[in-house]
Image 1: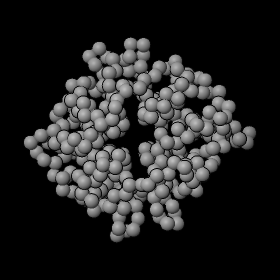
Image 2 (image 1 turned 30 degrees about the horizontal axis):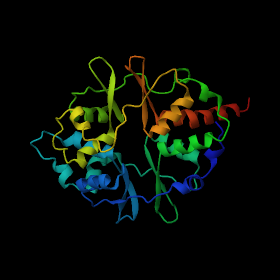
Image 3 (image 1 turned 180 degrees about the horizontal axis):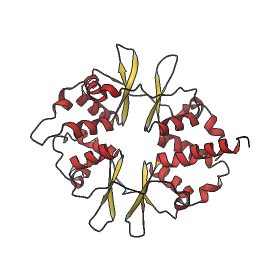
Image 4 (image 1 turned 120 degrees about the vertical axis):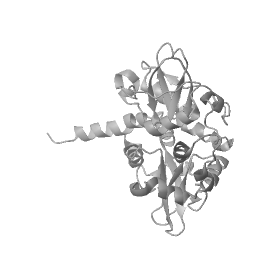
Length: 310
């Protein structure tokens, strides 16, 4: 694709889309922090350490899942670590020797830098922090970047590969796809999230048909409904408490073009499409990360190779 917009600075491309960033102090209790995520309608928040006077990490729904995965015993046993621990205590226990500094980016960096940082670090949220003031300006996501690129592509000639099919381009994951069934207990789904490091699990019925999807974002409803003390309920029971209207599983086929795929995922405002066959049986998953890799990083790598001296 035309790489011009990828060289623009984040400040230039996203200034009109800036919004206030919700910050959490590390002395906040874990329980209050997750309730605050729900109350503010956000999926993640930067963590501020007043002693260090700096951002030290991000709190995400993945943290909530890991806590439930680690400490849940039964509906009869309260999860002390969730109820009483402070965020700084949880970080010390969880990170231990694996501490890593907060991955962030400057507003002067390019859009390409942002895509590269998100994908290479395998993260879904990238704080944009002013290096002078230390303020968090906004949080970049795959979804926000792809939406911008799609708007830009509407005004420019589309690259030829946008007319190629998903199958021809080989975009997505098609091996060892993790999935669950309608009667799978929530705790088992959480275990799969942690062990397989996936962000969503297609729900497949007894005939092999994809009938629903359980994503990490759905897990935060356990905090919203205060039902995280009973994780033995089924996925079907849990999905009855979705806080937002659910239009159904967003699907696609291998024979659909890249252009169609991008349009569908942007308009639906979802993080992935489930690739199915004519019987609606699961074949694979195409994520926002897969699409940005194909749209941005792969063409950039190809340009580098073309410019190498012979």
